[in-house]
Image (cartoon, rainbow, N blue to C red; front, side, top):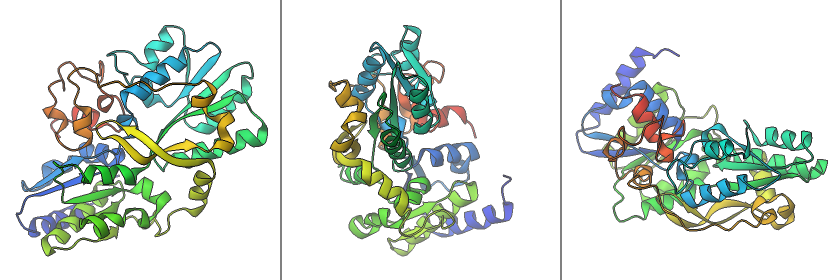
Length: 358
């Protein structure tokens, strides 16, 4: 879609009029990260405004130890691993080790576009155990829950889910509790907000005194969010604004939330860059244990670190820019990625690399 030049000009004028005090703002959605890089929005902003990427890429926040467990599971005899394409080249704790490499070594790995695709794969291959690698936030979690419910209704017992699904709110709380946290406002993820609603982000101004704006994904919509944030900061205000009302209601999507809650419960989970966070991961309830790959295959998560000098964890937390990592565009490139932020289509490093100079 072409830019509305008049709209962009007016928004930039309002952003500049908000004053010259330093403002660090953070987007918490991988789609926003990629849209900002692709459109060159950072190059249009005044020097006092910095844009940082937060923990908004689900592939990127998945820690190395969970990837290692997935890689081992993929080598189990009779197992077919069903994965989103973004996960195929994400390395575990050993550089170069990935689902793509394991497939070359003989593992049966299939790329799917949804949990329902994985369920149909299981229905068509009753001789195999199909394990769906569920990665995402509240946006994709209801779809995984729906697939589990349908598997139960259709009695498809060779289907299971390895859940690496995560909840955004606990991660943001953990991020804001960091001693070195220095962000003055958030662009809240429109996709997640469409499920959990405006109410899911009200804690940002109400408990932490920071402004937040729920935004869409066109360049003009992102600039509008930045305009609202800078104007709030210039007035000393902290409110949550919904600038994506065509998709986000105050209460979100009650049906999707009900499906999610019927299958999953929140448990303590590990995040790259943030460590373990209480009630931050979606795990299947006991009544769905037959579809829980961790229990079916008795996988044990072993502690692991990031690969070498990779600083994906610091990028995810907004401590550094992708270009500040010593591996960026040296040892770590999209062709030979060291960390997940360079692999995922929503990763901050991948966005910075692809749209350099814009």
